[in-house]
Image (cartoon, rainbow, N blue to C red; front, side, top):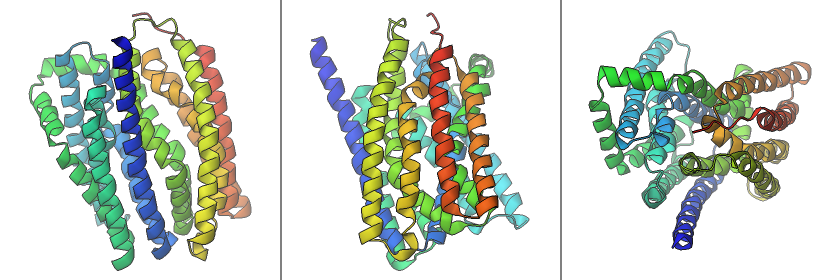
Length: 413
């Protein structure tokens, strides 16, 4: 009986990963079609918008959905999800006011008005909904949502490329896709709102006190983890190089988006499964084994993705995108090391190394930004800068893995 259940779980997990992979493949194919008709500078602005939304979405729920995954009782779990929804509402209001002030001062582009809504929608679609559907029997609905978002995103990108090849059109298409995904998960939203309405001041304070470590270190570390991959976007934006942002974003979509989509699907299931395992003594051994497997997967994925990018640029894309394979080749080193450290990054909340994770993330962001800024100052070459970024990033992940296992202490339950 146990083997039958394990087989069903494996099939459902494989179906989830396949659905997410197929959805991302559809989005990427549409991105290639769009890139053929849209200039890298316009594509770069859309990439900057998506990057900002992803960056802010990591903080907007204050990681309460992660705490909900390891809650001891269903009631506590529902209240924590309610806090995640309440937190997103607060962030939406604050972000809206901030964008209004910056727009009035003439400091931001016109599409900045879409950032608050994009932030909350990404938080729901990428993080909160997967956490609310972390049981293996719930993943089919999550898969349908992913497919819906992918189809709408792909369709809007192609229509934008053919009829209105601008950054604003691409941004609106992404917003519509995320919004339809949220509407499809209306039941989850109602559950979250009910959880928020049941909150009392005393219970909220207790949950905040119990979550203070995750809020103090987990939230900043999560934000930093997104920022580590988006350093080139902001460095190029600082140097007013929108075309370089567009080329980086194209290579990023090919190399990293499949990884991010699959990992965000697996993470809640991984965390829920490990947190309920009675045998914590073997956790370190399991993590070492998973890290070795992830390294192998990372090497294979990097080689295939780089080769695919070369073929696309060589035979399909116009001359203005010909640096994309070079970017992909440089970033493949980073992708390999990133995939290798994924299992231990999943386990951070369980082994109570949030402070270590946060400090490590800050150091990595600083090292990557300084490396790119120095290279751009010396050479002024965007390709050289991305090479420095990739080498420093890969070295940082190797050190991170070594130090993690060096200081790993499994808490007793």
